Length: 439
Image (cartoon, rainbow, N blue to C red; front, side):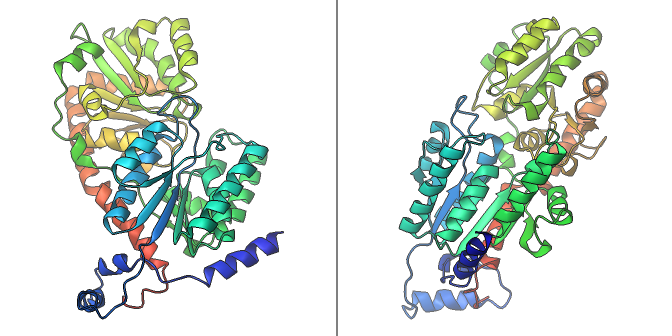
C-alpha cells in the first residue's frame, strides 16, 4: 500500500502545471525578468491564465465554543489567505466554527464546511473526512493544498496528493511527538505518521526552529523539505491602545487590583492549573492581585473548581471567548503564559506587541520569543512556585517590569511582523513551482 501511495505522489509531483502567474509578477528577482513578463502581459503578448486555486485545510473541531476550533493558528492562516486573494487567487478554506467562517468570508475566501472533523481519533469519521477531502480536491482541481493541524495535515496531504494536486504544503504548528504529554510509545507512533505523511507533500513549514531541527534529527523529514517560517502578527493592532473605562471597571471594579492576564484556549497544554496553584503564593505578597483568563474550552469548570478548592475563586475571573484582545491586553499589568508546550504562541506575540511585562514557560517556541531577563521572564513549565516567583518579581520591581515591556514591544516590531511571515510563506510557494523559469 505504501508503494501505491508513493507512486501516486511521484506522478502528481512530476505532472505539476504552471500556476501562480500573478505571484511571478510580484517577484523581487534582481534580473527583473518578472517586469518583462508584466510588460508582455500588458501588451497582450502573453496568454491569460485561469486564477490559481488554493485550498487551506485548517481542520480542528467546532465542539466547545467559538474559540476552540483551532486556537491561535487561525491568525496565521488568515493574513496569508488575504494576501493570496489580493494576488488574484481563488482561495477556499475549510472552516469548522462560525467564527472562522465569518473571518474568512469577510476577506473573500470561499468557505468549505464539514461535519466529519473530530479533534480526537475517530476511525469512521476520519475516513469520511478523508473521502470528502479527496473528492473535493478531484472535483475542484486545486493548484495548491496547504494543510494545518496534525489531523488536517495527515488526512489532507494524502488526500490532496492522491487526487493529483500539483503542490501540497503542510504547516506544522508543533509536532505531537514533541509534546510534554506524549509518552515514548505514542511518540514513536506519531513520528511514524508524520514521516509517512511527509511523502505526500512537497514542503513542510515549521513555525519554530526547534521543531524543524527535531524533525530532521528524528528522521521525520529530510532537511531540504522543511523550512522555518516564524509566526507573525499585525503588531500595530496592539500599539497605543487605550482601553475604555467600562472595560477596566469590568475587570477591576475597585480600581486598585493588580491585573495578571492570560489569553488562550482552556486546554491541558496551556498549563492553567499551575497558574491557579501559583495564586495563593502571589496573594500572600500582594493581596490585590487578580488573574484574568480570556478564552473558552473544556477545562473551564475544572479550573473554576480548582480555584474554589484553593480559596482563590474571588481572585480568578473567567471571561470566556472575547474578540477585544488588544483592549484587554492594554488593561493587564502583567501577562502570563504557563503553557506546557507550544508551536509558537500567537497569544505570546500579541502580549509582546502590547508591551506587557511577560512571564512565560521555558519551552520550545517561547524560547524564540523571550530572551530571559531582557524582554520577559522564562520559568520552568509545570512549576507553580516558579510562576509565582516570576509574577512577584515583576510586581515588586516596577522599573524592571516597565523596561521588560518596552523591549518586548521593540522585539515584536523587529522580529514578528505579519508582513514578514506572509512574504516568507509565499516565497516558499514560489520556490516549489517549476514553471518560474522567469526568475
